[in-house]
Image 1 (cartoon, rainbow over the protein chains, first blue to last red):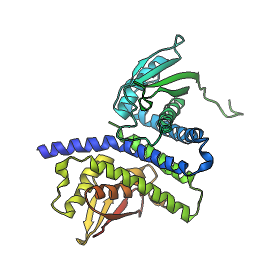
Image 2: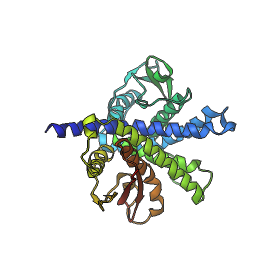
Image 3: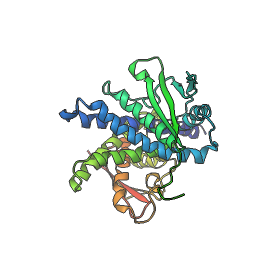
Length: 188
Length: 159
């Protein structure tokens, strides 16, 4: 009996680390690729940004379908509802953590998600001080891609990061506009 | 605890990213990308293997280790068990998954057969890496006859 219980715990542990380990291996690999190329040294941040953000965006576009299918969450009526769903349902479902929501702007179009740690970097040692940007950009891309699929154009960026020595990790979310469905030209 | 869907989505983007970066679109370039993916899988497999509780690490024999891969590792990583394990009892094992999760999203049958190796390289490395942590040196390859079923061939390297 206890052997079965042990097995279950082991499996859970390994499962939860798979994503962060894989992400870490990917970042390490890409850092290696760029370190070898002298020409890109100056534009490292830009290139990493341009590579990771679109990948994150792609993940977000697929993730939202998975999320909507599994979560029974209805349409959000405003940005505050959206914030709640992101923090209490989505983060919980995919990363097993619930960030807190703070620092609402007076207009209600900006808020912060506060996480105790950067959720993507357990067990991973970052090769250099650029890597924090890489990690951040993937997650920002995911948030942007996912929300765009539910008709919200948003900006997501890390304003604090425990990887950089800050006390918490803070993601600032800003509502830009609602995306109207655009019909192709010539259709009513 | 990270949801399994996250790994699947990340894996897809990883394959796409490494393929996009490859300057050589010919067979030579593809080989490099496959090696890179396999190498990443190896590191992850090693790391996963290192996180096992100590008592798991005492296996009576080689077959126990392969059974561990088919049950515990596969459940932890893919949330299902391997469908079959065969061996010639001389160091070669064939692990068959009839519905490999990383291939399931890609249509079934023969349509994307050419693409399949890209989606298996990381997992081959994963198996090789976990085996390495368990003290076993191996060569791991994969083959697909029809999606989403695939076979992983593990050949133990005697030192």
